[in-house]
Length: 132
Image (cartoon, rainbow, N blue to C red; front, side, top):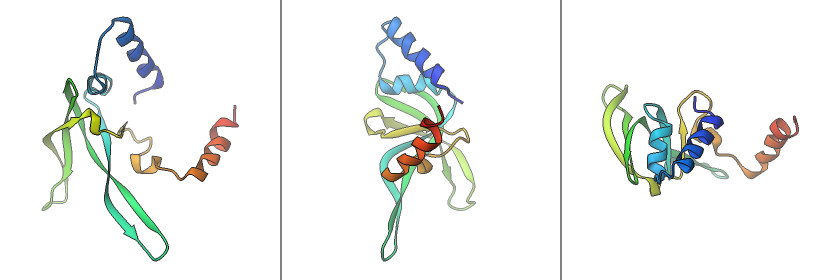
C-alpha cells in the first residue's frame, strides 16, 4: 500500500533533483507494477427511482506499466463478455489531463465509496478530526 510518506519522499526527490516530470510520469513511478483504479469523470450507470437518482462512477482498472510524457500506460483489466471472468492484457493509454481521480487497489476502499455527500463531511470530522 502506498503511504503518505512514500508520496512525500517522491515529491521531495523530484524537487531536489530538479526532475521535471509530468503527472503521468509521477504516477508511473509511484504506482509502478501496482494495480490502480482511474476515474475519468464518467458514469457507467445511472439508476433512477421516482425521488432518487444515483450515478455509479465508471473507472478503468489495471496495473501501471509506464508513462511517456503525459500518457499513462496501464495493463487494463476487464470482464470478459462470455466467461464473465476478470481478464488482464489489454494495454490502455490514458492522457493525464483526462484523469479526475486515481487510487491504488489495495483493499482500503474503492473510488465509489469515496464519493460522499457534503453532509457526510461532519461524520469525517467526528470520526477522524475530533479524535486527536
